[in-house]
Length: 113
Image 1 (cartoon, rainbow, N blue to C red):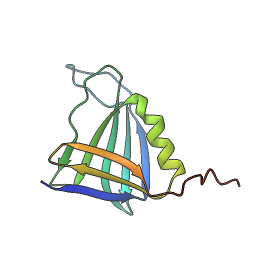
Image 2 (cartoon, rainbow, N blue to C red; image 1 turned 135 degrees about the vertical axis):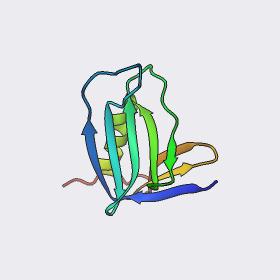
Image 3 (tube, rainbow, N blue to C red; image 1 turned 90 degrees about the horizontal axis):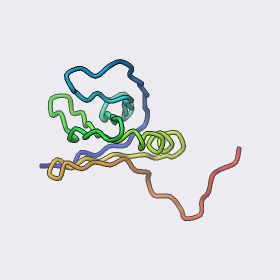
Image 4 (cartoon, rainbow, N blue to C red; image 1 turned 90 degrees about the vertical axis):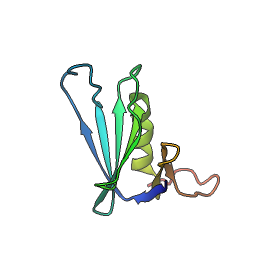
């Protein structure tokens, strides 16, 4: 089992509409994350109070799927919009993944334009 890790350099947001059939849980929002042009992470956001599907690594496409509650969407989007560098990691052994910033100096604050 290995740890999959990459920098995120671009992202794409997708909102889904429609109904849920046969009690299959569909994400309401998806953020597709890329390292340059390589699609490497799909962060899926599900309605609150529903069981989240397991995180997953598709070995055929080298794509990591991380599942979050919808309440995490604004936090993840905020990091993608406002921080640099951004990374993700996923452990196949523990099935845990995360999206994180790079090292930043303490007290840096926001840069005024």
